[in-house]
Length: 432
Ligand code: BJ8
Image (cartoon, rainbow, N blue to C red; front, side):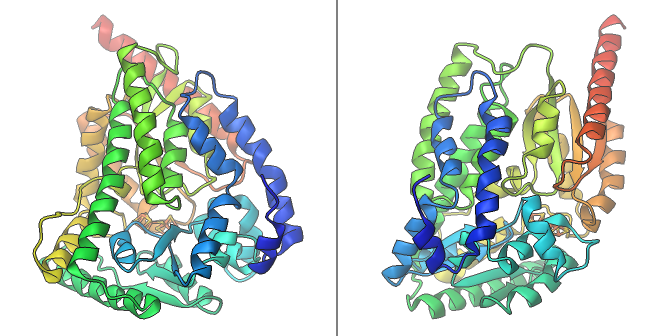
């Protein structure tokens, strides 16, 4: 990585502490990612993005802000990026996925709390995340209780706007969410000084739809019998989608998709035959949380799809582009976003349908239900998901795990036993 110390200093980064973070990431990434065999050439771009994770993009954001541009930071896939783009602003995802930030988070939050929240708050409080230091406004939402209360702490550091997400999906909730998007539009206009016109919003909608489409194309390649890409690599790409420049991301991911489709034609695979195809469902995996995928893919499994917010919930369903007024566009945005099936909703039967559908589409052989500790909504929803999957004859196992590596050995043992069970039931089905 080039020398960005002056830039980091200008962003009030705690340089000494930040050096510790920079020192561990390359080795961590090397062990988990670069050790994989037969990776697609197109992954070089994403390797570069990670090698420059606190550099290149931060410099771009700084240059943009120097010219008067504004940067928004969000924590949830319900925040409509389209509105930010329509205001000629930039949006970056800020969810923390590293154990490094947890101790700083614990200085201001209770210990028995979701690591994603602790890491996100810790990244800001400790002054070790240049993305947090580059945003002009944070956008929170009322999803889980932990996040809601965390916003009250974060707003002591950076201006914060909170979107009131309904927890049901009735018509009145849709109207309420539409109102919230309108209020958010006013916030974006207020901060940027730019008016969001119908034309600008249309551009934003088209661009984000394009990003969704390229991610859908990428995921489609994972439906192939011969997997052309590992689950770890696919996860990394989705994680990067949250903060990369959208146009560049679309271009690079399109190139990669072409390569993957050619691999499928040639029947080139990244895993040996017999590797168990796994659907992961549950809480999001913010960068650099690669733990579960790494454990699965080094224990005899391959992740073929993620029903998570760093997976299909991020890009399934497009916003209708053919609307004639801002009012209609707002309704189209509300409709698309309220189609996301997060466990913070009740009832949330749609998520169960999604899991079963994705399991079939991606020809999965088993489901790993992943939950971060203290995430009550996802942990509680396991009961209903498990019952529904069992009814369908779909094997499922729940794993609750935080960002530390302490439980890695124990999880590996459980995964190996689960994959063995999948193999035994497959053999039994064949001999029947
Ligand atoms: S739409 S999953 S990104 S809220 S922070 S709920 S893990 S206890 S992140 Fe989420 Fe939006 Fe829903 Fe997706 Fe649980 Fe942790 Fe809360 Fe979390």
